[in-house]
Image (cartoon, rainbow, N blue to C red; front, side):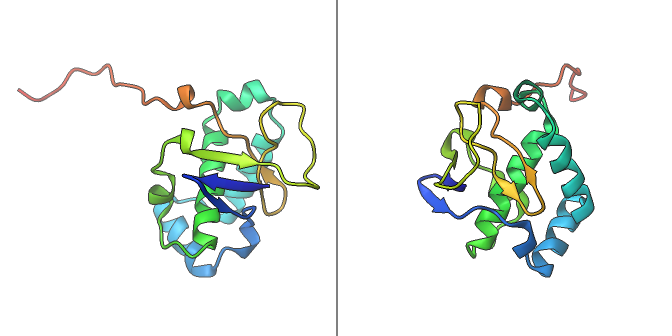
Length: 137
């Protein structure tokens, strides 16, 4: 599995190859520990496609895969910077030897120890607007 981001190919993300500094920076930025990431990935991996499409966890795991791919390629990006791209510019591409998926979209990217997700459709990523009244006068 490889990830193509804005036309650039990245090898399959491997959480076990994240440097200590990258993990420290990621944890400071997100508050997520390696255990949190693995547990979230396991939850996402056990979901049906329909559940993944409605899951914030699935979106976060896809974002983690994007960040790991970019950081492992030597890009000095935070998690937020790595994910600040249109989802339509991201593709998860199966490679020979990857497990086949019944879903017509590519199989999920693996992130170390079996953590996986599938990208969510772009229409699921639209920002929700707040219904609170503005306090500005």
